[in-house]
Length: 295
Ligand code: NAP
Image (cartoon, rainbow, N blue to C red; front, top):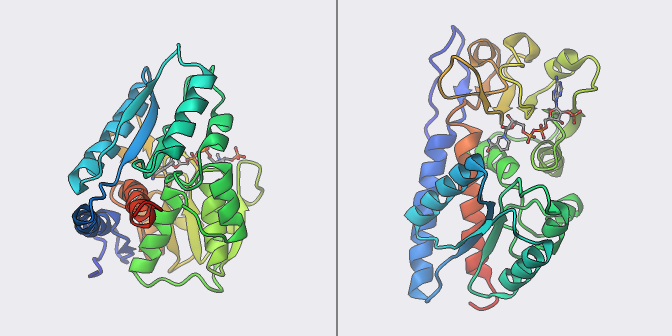
């Protein structure tokens, strides 16, 4: 991919353009889906989603629209206040056993009366294309083959695209959530970075960040990381998207104007890590369809 220069600030951080990379990967996925259809295989992603959660419905619709564009089909299963845990576990068992279903997404959060952890336990690792079940995370921890979490996987894909090596670098991850901070740290470790994980109880956070060759912000606090937290020339991956009153669109965890003057590379919000997440989910579905035992 051609490198584009950032127009913000005097010194220029180079942009890790997740939007352009996503678009290219989706075109490649569409070609792979076409090749699969010649073998009579249509990739299918089924989704279980809380029917009364407008944000979840919006996310799922967006994922399904992108899936549809590249030829992935799927069914949405609405989970409501009347849904029982038994129904949920049975449905997951049914989808696990269905060779025509290549991936299953449990959109978080499910209604409170349901045990989401038990549902994730029941999801077969071969169908967990979001890579967030305990089995998938265990496979990441042990280095075994399996689906990797979409958001950190998207970050690794961005690093690969721009030829940015992790080996020997000091990587600092701010955030330790199960879906983002922890798996991002494990993926960086897998790539031979020396990793520090920070969180809300970390002391001396700014100093730790300033020592980072590679900084991942996965916090959920708008523009918390400013330019003076960043080592000159560092790689900065911003996973955050935050709504800020009075501002349109999403705002990252990194203040892009000041950070761009210090960093060597930066992923913008929007257009960086965000678009890569959906693309990596769909990529996992196509991988699953290509390697399904029924093929
Ligand atoms: P989360 O579960 O709320 O975790 C946030 C993490 O940040 C926690 O580990 C927390 O520490 C840490 N933290 C909070 N305040 C801190 C502070 N002042 N200093 C240091 N650490 C602090 O959030 P998440 O689900 O990981 O999401 C993080 C961000 O990424 C959000 O903006 C979210 O919207 C975004 N996100 C983006 C994508 C994408 O596709 N791009 C996907 C998922 C999430 P403790 O553990 O100590 O509480």
